Amino acid sequence: MTSRRKFIQLGALASLASFTKAWGKPAAKVSKPVVISTWNFGVGANVEAWKILSTDGRALDAVEAGARVPEGDPKESSVGLGGLPDRDGRVTLDSCIMDEFANCGAVACLEHIVHPVSVARKVMEKTPHVFLVGDGALKFALDQGFKKENLLTKQSEKAWKEWLKTAKYKPVANIENHDTIGIVALDTKQNLSGACTTSGMAYKMHGRVGDSPIIGAALFVDNEIGAATSTGVGEEVIRIVGSHLVVELMRQGNSPQQACELAVARIVKNQPQKSKEIQVGFLALSKNGEYGAFALQKGFTYAVYSNEVSNKIFEAKSFY
Ligand code: ASP
Image (cartoon, rainbow, N blue to C red; front, side, top):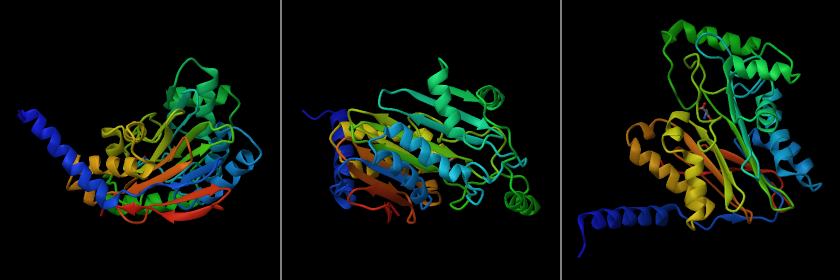
């Protein structure tokens, strides 16, 4: 007898099946090592990561080295130095890192430090904790020898002042005012790691933290299965614990591509109206070098570097 519960379950499975039929394709596959990063700035990040991966280095070192590239670039207005500030004019950074042993570290709302990903790694390696925020994270960074710097460039300050003229101090998430570098890698020893770093949503409320420093939301690594990372409106990724979801969907037998598609579909199901106006993208890499990507909107690009794919940019398929 089909109970109501079973009926609902069957209905849900049927809609998922038609969804994967619409988008699901076997994921692309490359040999190890490989590094994959979000957006066009992933190309520069991959160059540094590849130097490590191609000389048999560790995925963890590769993702950290890669993430540091846009962090240190004053022209990137969504990551590290030169990142757009919050609505009070303060540049606050979020970052996390995770290795093949499920070791992880994170910092959020960190000011004055150009490389939050390296502070996150120190949290992972030098403290009994996973996550430090705000002043505590800054104090820890300074104790570890990081330099205190002004991260608000002239250009970002100018953009913020322009925003103040018309924005009525109201934080608004739109498709243009945020991005994150999420980077995942598989090394020659077949170990996975990932990192994520951002200045978050431009002109956010002071103290706002997005998905990017949250293990499970913007980054998750399970060395038996795969790694995933996200970019886009962090609030929506947190609601579905997105990157963890992607990896768990892979564990259930979905390809990285299908897993990214199903995670995006979950956001659409939760927020059918809102999902039309915002961007969220996922990237996933499996233990055997399959990768996939999917986004709510068109325009989500990612860069792949392996022996077969020489640091090329691809545009992910999208729900809308
Ligand atoms: N996920 C980031 C945040 O919400 C922004 C982005 O990746 O676009 O802070």
